[in-house]
Length: 189
Image (cartoon, rainbow, N blue to C red; front, side, top):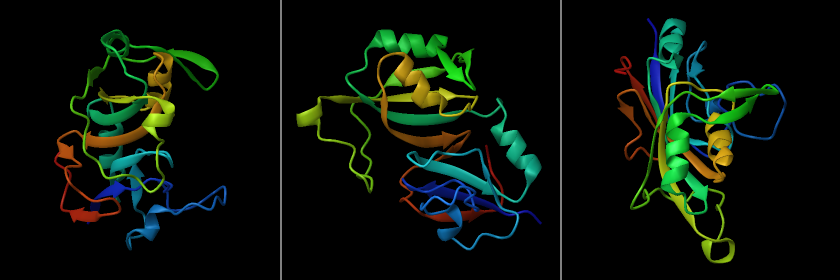
């Protein structure tokens, strides 16, 4: 019988159970006593936060990582993003993947007004008064290349300061606090 988990990955955690590079960062296994064979479905880099699904079922993992399932992110950006940049993101932008140029697939993107009300993360982003304004956008993709969203927003002139995955398919982060783990019978994506 396979087991499935929904977690709110906190900032600073590695989305793995083994630390191959021996970095001094906490691992997912420090949040909960997961069963042997549990795997993260996709990953969030150390600086990213939000919704992460874990399972012991490889077939379920493969389906959720496929292009059939949307992944939505809220990104805090350096500067006030404009509609031109949103349109560029929607059409697809050229980024680098493994040293080669890659054109991202079309995606959904929109500015968020008012900005989402997330608690401050453990490491402060920056001081707007000293470093200028920021803005928030929602970006929904079906692919997941290495650091793709960060590369996409930088390509249109607005580097990502904070990245939070808020939805995978029909599963939403909602008001789940950072580091919370919930075991579920199955994923309704």
